[in-house]
Image (cartoon, rainbow, N blue to C red; front, side):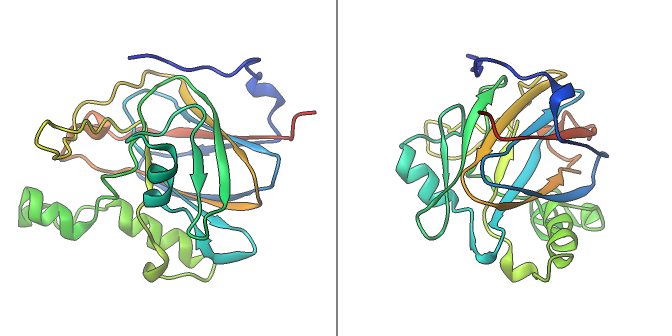
Length: 215
């Protein structure tokens, strides 16, 4: 799989803010226009479900459909512009050492897990529940959760047009970096899924770095 890098590559020690997100956990932070956010897969094969909202108007948020339509590609990688529900560019992907990020399969939920894997897994925590927990801190509800990006999640499109969830290709330390084109609220569910191979059946922690605007 081709890997795509930005030049120059910034040193992590120059980050303004450095967050550690445990396995299975939700997370959110503000990223201001001109700043860049780097999401690091610390141990490899960890899906990172991610949403973006305009910081001063949560009604404007990431649109997976418009992002795919504008770029004409099934996947997110270097150069992809993340488009909002209002047709505005929210962020631009500026670096990607993995080369495969999905924005079609959506987030796992207790209901979807039950349908796919049986009633015995209904009690297991899922990304939709993480999203509900995290957006509630910002005055939103489950009605504000929309189709998301799954960074580092390997979802090939089968010849039939169906989506497959297979082993991730990201290795320890792989990252994706995005430059904010407006002030955005970043919301993450560090995916707790253990019933399919998106996390190698072993959820692990991630790191989130926020860098200042480049000159």
